[in-house]
Image 1 (cartoon, rainbow, N blue to C red):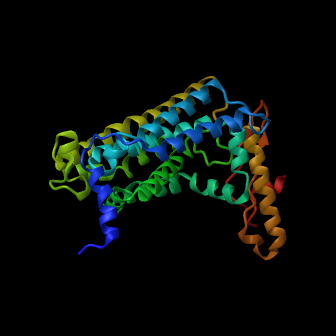
Image 2 (cartoon, helix red, strand yellow):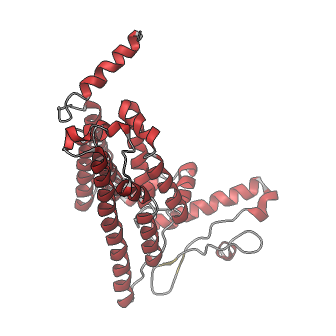
Image 3 (cartoon, rainbow, N blue to C red):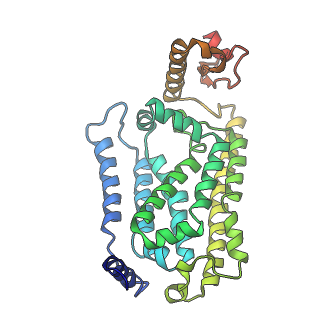
Length: 341
């Protein structure tokens, strides 16, 4: 005989699955989207300062696009279909969070504001680590593939809290994906144009390999979507195959287009004789802060001098611009640029 708690928890589940297209208001999701827009306006438009400049028109458009993408991913009908009915809807929701909402949110943030947010030593260390291309590939692959594991999908199908947590993880995975690509994040590790293209090519292949499994699987992999026919009129296996195709069709053009744009822009600047990676003052300031922290660590722990690398400081070059810091440390544990300074 079921206990009272089992009956109480079962009632909402039956109601939620009675009609796949029944409207649900999702007040929590709308509150989050509204709060994000209001916070953006309050921080950047009410008493702006040098560290919080007013957004440009392009940044306003990016923020508006990010909010639309978040609303589409987290509210009716896509959120309901992704939770209980369709793997294709779940993949579409994930793509909106990682390929649309995440980069647009980053692009909407002025560089001085990002510099202020990431200035604390702990956040700066995280930024420096997760924007290394190899680390970003590994982290994004783990998050993208791990959140598609059958137990995780079952958990998000049965628990609103689990769904919210996974959505936050996916948005964070999107930040990791785009961190090494976007050029306005102070302190981020940014590869050159060719490195960016290779990075995006790898990101388009490794994290999406489950799509191949979805396309060629002959049996449903997720019991949570066993009734897909009631929502979208196809069997669970066909829904699974559509999800795999959608993941590939959406991911490859987006990432490869960005890679092509990065290469084309670098080639155009090279023909014009312009610097392809001009450093801003926010970037230089971040390197100075990292060098100062490293020096303080050496003073507190002199015995670790041989094992501590002092970050190199960018220096001006003739004709304008800045020379990026050298990444190779010298024999005594400090970079050669740091010694010269």
